[in-house]
Image 1: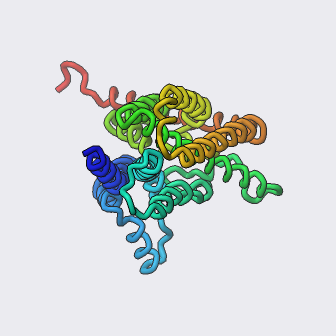
Image 2: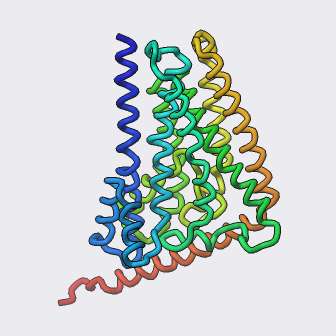
Image 3: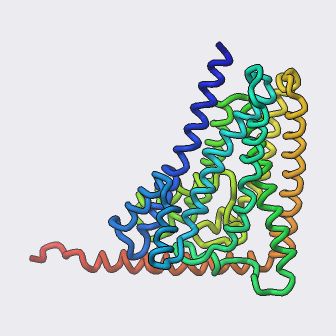
Length: 344
């Protein structure tokens, strides 16, 4: 009975991982594509393509037919959402089956190992590709802290590549270990509280934009699906996420410490599982990845790119000062347009 319930839960999680990323990116992309001069007639079809996971195929078709450069930002966005909604459930279910020994007798364990490796290492190029995006709506190249044409950029990019991947690896394994140790409800609550704190940081910037409240709320909540696991554009702190970029290192460090405390309190439960080899391999990999991420994060943000990050912060402040001035003029214009009492 327990085996049957475990299979049902695993199937539900994996199906959720296949369907949720497209819907999440549709919800995220819609308010982004409504910015500027865009209209609902343009933004809605884009959101629908994301919802049905056909946007990459559509961009490829447009490129072959009309030689139009694909909008890679959306492709990266849905891949970031897949980390949270697909890779985390896949790794959690697979590692749970391997550690608890609930695989059916004679089941091909190599497929589970292959699926686990794919969930972990299949995203190794996400960070490198994200650091090469350019153009609207974020125009990340204007905020990039490193110069691709500068001498010695190769070692900086290598360190960022290691930093990005170790951040993804330790967080994926951390969520999987938390699922094994505390169950699905505690893991969900952990991610939900993490998302709530992230939402506060995102709201600090989106609330300053001269947009309707509903659009500000959509932009804020939409970012949570993309930044649930991977902090993209950390080295391109665009104005829209400047507050989050400044505090995400400390936030992730505290988040990991809380996860370690939650996992540690179930030490006896974990020690009783038969799959100790798999458990210790994953725990060791997560620990090494976390130490590398924490060390490189401090070195890159507060040593290598300290001046560049300060310049980006000042640039973001200037951007929001401009937005505040625009908002002020808009309010004054609306007051001027209002009819005075007694006028016909």
